[in-house]
Length: 223
Image 1 (cartoon, rainbow, N blue to C red):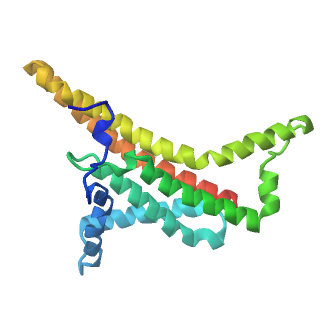
Image 2 (tube, rainbow, N blue to C red):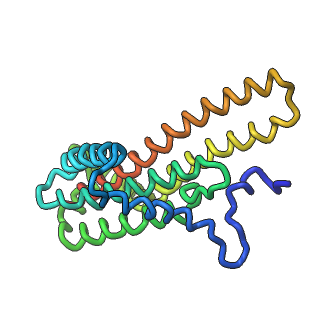
Image 3 (cartoon, helix red, strand yellow):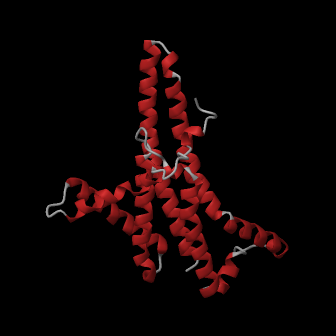
């Protein structure tokens, strides 16, 4: 019996737990890229990669930063895979934990801040005060912009993990009530869970895209 509503998201505490190995399951699909005749799924994924490359290239603006789109596409692929793999029964959802999401967000934000303050110090200082700010409000704007910059990795991590927890928690709660329902209500419950699963699939794609786009925008601010 669950101790609380969120205990279903807890990783196993046994020695040598393999729960976090679900993050690496996608590596098994990499050799399919090297087939002599690519499959339709490879063509479809290549199309997605090219579309993302064009969009991230526009967001980064600077021509010398266009090669960084490979890094952002890899980040998108990692989050998208882990979001989707968590929708399958009995598979650990690593993106619902701050351990993974903060590990992804914090190094990116820290590297952007270090790069910006070392190479574009004047630009970073000017960014603390938006254009057209009255002189009397400048000290307050500096404090507000500083706080907003500091909480960026936290907001990125919490947004991803909270959205993944919310849908999984709702599916878990509905599934636990199925044993006490009538046949008619059971059919309605199954239909509701199918619709929720479709919604969760959309959330998995949207949240991975939002995380990557925001990271790209943060990187373009320091250049």
